[in-house]
Image (cartoon, rainbow, N blue to C red; front, side, top):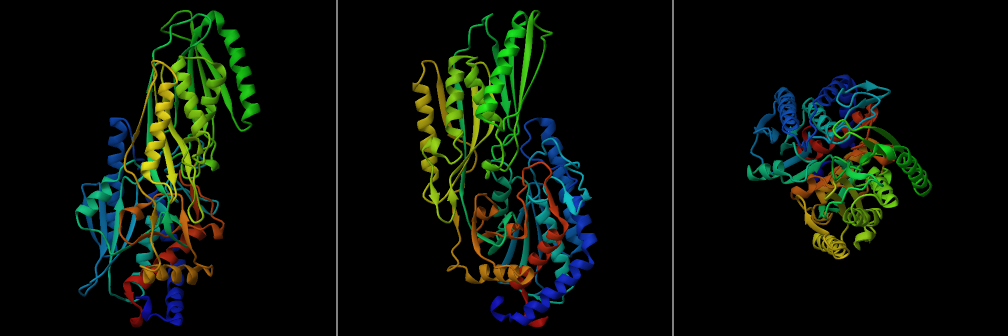
Length: 515
C-alpha cells in the first residue's frame, strides 16, 4: 500500500524494474510480436468469419495460458469467451487488484506498410492491429508481472488479470460472464486509454437508423440505383464507400460525363474527397452497363471522427448532387448527410460541451442503401450533461421528421447494443488507488501525472473503482493509431509502459517494506 512507501524505496524499486526490463527487452518485444499474429478481429458477420475468429481467439488464449503458467499464475478460461490469469498471495488476502484488457481487435483495413497480423518489428516500432488497442497493453502487463517476480517483494494482494474477447463489439457478454463468475476485483486498471490517469470517460451509444421506401420505376434516361455500402464498424470512420449504378449502355458516355462532372463539383465542396470510377457491361442484362464508383477516405477511431475522413459522407453528398434513385432514398440519405455531417452532434440537437470531458461527437460508421431500404449505424459519444435518453429521443425525432417529409417513407430509430453512460471516479472516494497510479507514472517518466478524461469507452465502465491507465502518452509524442492503418507502438514506449505497469502493481499489490 502506498501509505507505507517512502520516495527513496519507490525509486529503488523503480530502478530495479528499469534494469530488468532493459535486460529482458528482446523477450518482451518477441512476446508482443507473437501476440499480434493472431487474427482476432471480432464482429464477423459471416459464419466462416465467425469460425475463423473463434479459432484465432482459442489459439490466442492458449498462447496467454502458456505465459501465465510460466509466471505461476492460475489461468481460468471461460469457454474462450473470457479468461482470468491470477497471481494469488501466499497469505490470505482481503483485497484484489485487477487489470482488465481485451485481445479482440477491429478489422485491419487496407493499405498497411507491413502485414497487419505479422507482428513486424521494424523502424523502431512493433507493427500490427492491436499494437495500441489492446494487445500491446496485454503484453505490457504480462511483461510487468515477469519483472515483478524477480524483485523479491512480498505480495499482499491478489492480482487478477481479466482478459476479454469482445470489447470491440456492440455488447460485452465477456464482461458479463466475468461478473457472473465473481471475478470482479476491488480496484481495476484498464490499459486501454491514455496516460497519465483517466478518471472520466464519455458516455457512448450506438444508434441504428433504418428506412424503407417504394422502389423506383425503371427509366431509360437515367441510371438505376443499385447499392451503396460503406464501413465495417460503428466505432471506425469508414475509409471506403462503393456506389453501384445500372444504366442503359446507349447512355454510357453521357452518364460517365455526368458522374465525372459531379465528382469535380464534390471536390470543390469537399477538397479532401477522392473518387474513382469503373464501368463494365452487365453479363446478366444485355444492353446494360454497371457503374461502380469508389470513394476513398481516411480511417480513424470513431471517438475521433475529425481525425479521419468519412467516405460514407462523401458518397451521400454525391448522391444528393446527382438526384438519382428513389425519392425516399434521397430523403433518407439527405437526412443522414445533413445530421451526421456535423460531427459535434448539433445535427441531432445533442451538441454539448463539458469543460472536463469535451464535446459530443458523432460518427456515421456503417451505411447500406438499396433501391428500397437503408440502414445506418451511428456512434455517439457524449459528456456529462447528455444522457442516453436524450440521445434516443433525438434520433427518434430525426426519424419522425424524415418519415413525415415524404409519403411512403418510413424511418425508424433504435438503440443498438449496450449503452455506456458517462463515467467519473472521484479522487476523494479512491485517493490511494489513484495516487498510486500517479506515483508510478511520475516516477518512471518524470512527467506530471494529472487526472484526465477521454472520449473512448473502456472496460472501466464495467467494473467498480476502475480507471483507464495508458497505454498512449501524448506527452511522450504518441499518436493515436487505434483502428487506423499502420497501427504500431514505438519500442521505447512499449518498454516504458512495462515499467509503469510494473511499478503501479508493485505499489498496489506488494509490501514494499520487504524489498
